[in-house]
Each structure stands twice: as structure tokens, then as C-alpha cells.
Amino acid sequence: AQSVSQHNHHVILSEAASLELGCNYSYGGTVNLFWYVQYPGQHLQLLLKYFSGDPLVKGIKGFEAEFIKSKFSFNLRKPSVQWSDTAEYFCAVRDVGTGGFKTIFGAGTRLFVKA
Amino acid sequence: EAQVTQNPRYLITVTGKKLTVTCSQNMNHEYMSWYRQDPGLGLRQIYYSMNVEVTDKGDVPEGYKVSRKEKRNFPLILESPSPNQTSLYFCASSMTTGPLHFGNGTRLTVT
Image 1 (cartoon, each protein chain N blue to C red):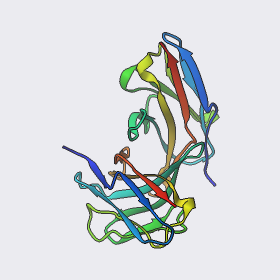
Image 2: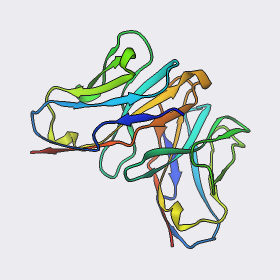
Image 3: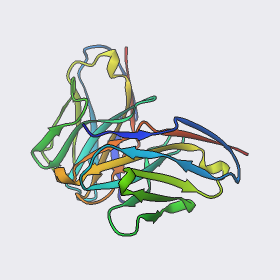
Image 4: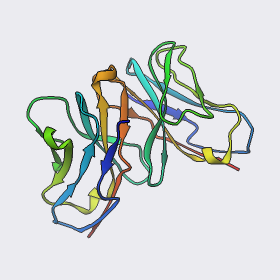
């Protein structure tokens, strides 16, 4: 069965620190990859997505992610976090082989940024 | 404004009392899906629909029903709710090749 693993469940950083959140998936076919963010009390919003092409993807709010096919990874990065980045982050994988309809989420990483 | 609308936002009910959570999208998306979010488990897919009258089970469908009679609506039905269905529920929609757009969520408590 397909699965998505996020390496860290909780991360605490000080403002201006660099961020990297790990994401690995188990499916070997063609996939679309996503990172979503959920701010406290809100619904999930898209941060960035990868479908094809340049494996380094830039998203909103200074976030970027790198797709490494050989490692089945799609890690999220930000050079300098802000207090407003405090949120929960979800990696998601859509199996394009099943018609592009099944999207599986990781368990999420809670990020807390200290001011 | 493009959006996915869920109602109600909060619902407290008792075991066995049938309930429906509504979901509507105004983006003409083919694909709609229901997820439940539980601490430490992320989002788990309950049911999804690829188009009108086409639905399929996700990873945790037990105890839930759905219908897709119109393209814009995808209600989630709990025929006999139980306490283990206490959770935060999200409806989402997308074009077949696009990212998911989420509703604001429904926090359900079953006592």
C-alpha cells in the first residue's frame, strides 16, 4: 500500500533559523507531490506542488521543495522562518496511475517558531 | 469567490442519531473527497468521487456513506454515529490534475 512518511512530528525553531521538513513516499509510479499548510484553526492551503519538470519547486511565502526521484523524497525548505510560519505542514502524494484521484497525506509536522 | 463550503462547522450529537454534513463547491470540479483529521494520523480519506454518480471508498470508509447526485454537492452521511467518529472532517475538491481545495472543516463530537 502507498504511504507517506514525514520524519518529524514536532519542530521548534527560533525566528530566522532555517527549516527543512522531510517527506518520503512509498509509491514507485508516476506521482504528483504537494505540501499543504494548516494554520491554527484553519483549513489546509496549498504551499507548493510538483507535477513534472524542474525538481526544485518554489511556493508561496518563501518556501521551496526539492523532488529527488531516486530517494522518493520531497523535502520542504525555507531559509529563514518567521513567527507567522507556526502551523502544521502536510506532505501529500497523488497517484497519477489510478487516474489521479487518490491523494494520500502524511501524518503532519507541527512547527512552532519562537519569536 | 471560488470556495468549498461545509456545514455545519461544529456538531455535537449522540450515538446512533443519523446526521449529514453538507459540502458544496462552486468551481465545477469533477473530483470531490472527504477526509477526517485526527491528531498524529494526518488526514485519512473516507470516500471520494470522480464525477456525478461515481464514488469510491478511501482508506477509512466504515460507518460513512456519500452520494454525488449533482456535480457541486457531496454530502457525508453518518447513519449511526459512534464515539470513534468524533473527529475533524474536511471536504475537498479539485480538477483531476489540480491541487485540492479544502472546506473550513466540521468538528464533530459524538457522545
